[in-house]
Length: 117
Length: 113
Image 1 (cartoon, each protein chain N blue to C red):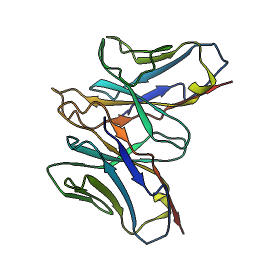
Image 2 (image 1 turned 90 degrees about the vertical axis):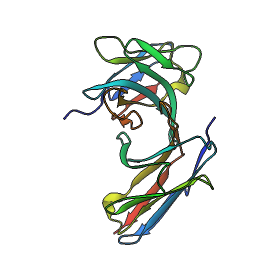
Image 3 (image 1 turned 60 degrees about the vertical axis):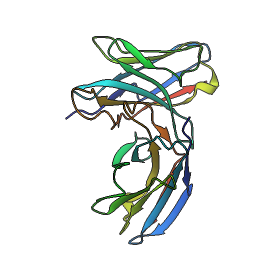
């Protein structure tokens, strides 16, 4: 009964390094979403992916951020040349596909807390 | 785009009392409204949701009401317990794909024993 899994749970990077966050959706889910949460704030949508496709990336910063969900393996959120302002909690959520069940409900993982020194 | 506002930002109640958290939304096309509970250091956990074709939904001590005309929805927790203490978020999205959730800013609920 594994839920959405994210790793690492905590990640420390120095300015200019790359951060790579991983998300494995719930079993049977083919839709993945990434959200960012700044301290004391709500979650902000970043990107929505299906296997091998980016469906909606309207919340992603134009530079340094990218996401993928390959045919095999977890979804990856990649942040290049991190800056202090990237420090936040990054949450992944998943939902079933249209043919599998409800598409409206999203189930969240425990998050990755990124700290940029 | 959609704008979701949530009030209050903090709420302190005595154990056994009721707690009410309110949210408003701006996009009349939104038709799905989930509520999440987030404990310290954890991810948001879905506790209840409501779709626009109903006005109220209840699950044990938790209920949600929706007023489509006024574009607001509320979370009601009765007989609060210390373990209800957490941050609660409302969200809104719209079909047919519901792929983007717009979250409120959160309410920190403290239930005093």
